[in-house]
Length: 380
Image (tube, rainbow, N blue to C red; front, top):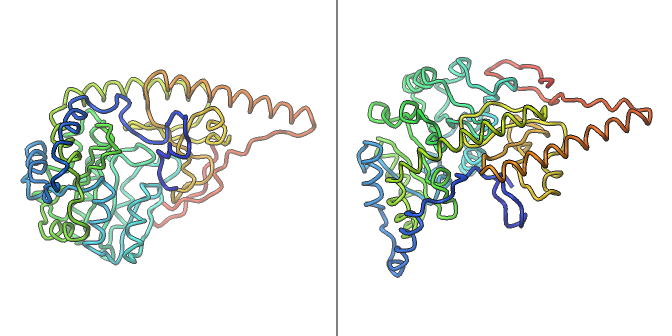
């Protein structure tokens, strides 16, 4: 399982493994989906014309530069199937779906493994952007770390890729959780740089993962045409198109969400710090953390599901991601973690009394590759 959100095999758990808006789905979006059921006897609009028109107005781009799909994953696969790149560069750790799609078309995938002290992208990354690459995949904010790419560096990457004739696939699916989203987004750069493809989704902000609705923005119409042919027709259902059209005007809901997520994220980080659990500051609606205790299994015993990140490239056992949820759920998580940590300390004290030192080794036990250099594994 490479994703979170598996509530079907973890019934009755509070799900912290999927990063969905803690405020849920806007009521107007639910209503639009319900009203659309009167049209389900018809095929969906195969070109999503009304939705693309609304997205064009929202992002100030031409509708013909927008492509819609059955969730962000559908857009990723269509992009890869359309281009069939021979070589690609992805960050590690990063969203696993990029690499999975690339493997299906036989792409040679190279990894740029982030420094495990900061998990931040820096200027060293520019050194590995060579003409041998066909496409680079980036996620901003990154998943699972929640780290954003400095805007000046991102713009330099865009220009660097243009000069080297490398396509840039930029996943902005979590960017709308940031107050300065408009300043950070590269949507306004697509007209000048047709090699950029921007991925967006309704899933996270509008709390509708079960509907499956994602979209991409690119001014290279040849790429969009190939993507349209790279998958089955009618991929976006009638309720999904209706939901998207209804979601875009809900900007007061978006502002409310940003404030709420920031407040709850601050609460969680304060509590994690109090519990001496290592975490990395996040700009998104999730927090990346590390602990030597097997938190996933111990939290499952308490009815809480979190994302075990040990299967991300570049990570090992002990790394986890938790969603930012409502205060009641967040308090239950902190209470459970507090209990687990107390029991862990008690267990170590018992080992010492029994003649064992009970020392906990916090070394991640792996090396990370920053550009072309090997950097030693980090001791927390």
